[in-house]
Every structure is written in C-alpha cells, then in structure tokens.
Image (cartoon, rainbow, N blue to C red):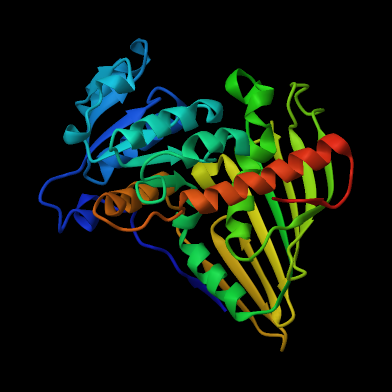
Length: 344
C-alpha cells in the first residue's frame, strides 16, 4: 500500500511563536557561506528576529539588507543580553574555539555539524560552560519526518545490518573542503549517517575495514570512503559516502544530497530513500510512505527556537562527540590499513 505521509507545508512563524512573548533574537556567524545564509533565511522564515550577521568583509551586506540585520566583524560584538541564540556556520576546524567562547560568555549556541573535525578539536569544547545544556549540534537528519518512524521500527526489531549510501553533489572540491584538516567527505558529509546510526545502537563499534579514494576530483582529501563497522550487539554498519560531480534526480537539501539507509532485521527490512520509506515484512507484506520534500534547515530552525525556550537539543554535545570519535576511528583505519580498529 502506498500512501502520502507528509508534514504539510513547511513550518511558518505561526507554528512556533504561539507561546513566545517576542520573537527570539538570533545572530549567525559565517552568514555569507552556503550553510550560514540558509540558516539566516530559515530563522527569519520561522519568525525569529535575525539581528546580527558576523562576517569580516562585505559579503553579508546584501543578506543583512534582506533580513534587516546588522553586519558586525567579530563575535566580540555580540552580547548575551541582546540575543537568545547564536548560530555558528564555519569550517569545522574553526567552530570549537568560537563555540566555546560563546558558551563561556553565556550564549545559547546552535553549531553546524560535526562538533569538531576530530576529537582533539572537540576537547576545546568539552570544558566550556554549559556545553551539555546550551549547545545544540546541527545534525539535520533528526528533523526529517521519516526518522521518527525509522527509529521506532529499529527499536521494535532485531537489527542485523544497516547499509548507508550518502552522496553530496559538488562541482568542485576546493576552499575549506580541500583542507586535509577538515577530514574529507567522511567528516563533512558521512558524519550525518555516522551520528544517526550510532544514536540507534549502544557501545563503541570497531572498524572492520575502510577504503578511501581521491580519484573523482584529485583533491588532497578523501573524496570517496567505504567503511564497515560492527557494534557490540553484532549489528554491522556499512557506509559509502562520496562527493559527486553529477546532480542526482532527487534528494535532500533541494536535491543536493542523496541519502539511502537500508536496515535489515530478522523480522523484515526498511528502506529510507530521501523522501520515501518502504517496509517489507517477513510474512510478505509491504508498506510504503511518501513524504512531501521539506526544508531541513527550516525544520531545524523551528527546533532551535524551541531549544531557546527550554527544550533539550535534538543532538547533544555528548552524542555529537560520539559520532566524531567513530569518524576518527574510520580515519585511523584508512590511514593504517589495519582491520578492527576500536572506536574510543
């Protein structure tokens, strides 16, 4: 049976501002970048007041004019009594120190994933004041309506294996993505799946095998990564993640990101592919649910507004750190060629 199962139109201000005495005031650090501009527009669309854009040059001026915001050159120009939230959307290596500074000054922070490029970078954040209460890590997959159904199905079934294919369309690999310190595709894109899958299963998985390639673009970072891990429960997790020069016919983030998660269990199989879910039962029955495409940045902005009001973050520092530790183990296995590298 095929049914439409969508959230309806994307969220708007009336959906989230019913109990607030005033719109939350939001600043965006790195607003001129692709992610930063998406964050800024999403918060404005859900009814927040985007008051400050932090950029060192003039690149954010047109966006500031569009949103009625003020451009400032540094986070030192932000004051915690004037803002309910600061969004940090910078290259991963720059984010931990900036987020730690903001947390120590009393801000509530939404940071782009991952929490750091590696565990050494995350250590900068671990000692920050309020890191477990006032930091939300922006893993947008948790905002997709399919995740609630998939997560419940996994809890209700004895899972054998999870296979993920995550492909992000990029015409070129340059700028910060080509910096080896950023970790390559497994850290920049594959970390989404690593974090989500690790949220379903307990314990530190061991890395059984990893293969990397930089042949698609010839950049100095891993552009294609295939890794197989095993959780203590015996669940095998296989991840294929790569940047692709070809635009796929459909996907998340307005078609820029194609994601497939295939879960095999003793009682059946569930396949999540972008905006559809397909379930095969052991008795031969099948079900399919289709979702209207939704803007995950918009959904995340709505969740972050609730976070400003006291809700727990969808992804905490502790869970984000766990994903970074697993990604570190994948990187270590690819560098050493050794099998069965334990994740911390």
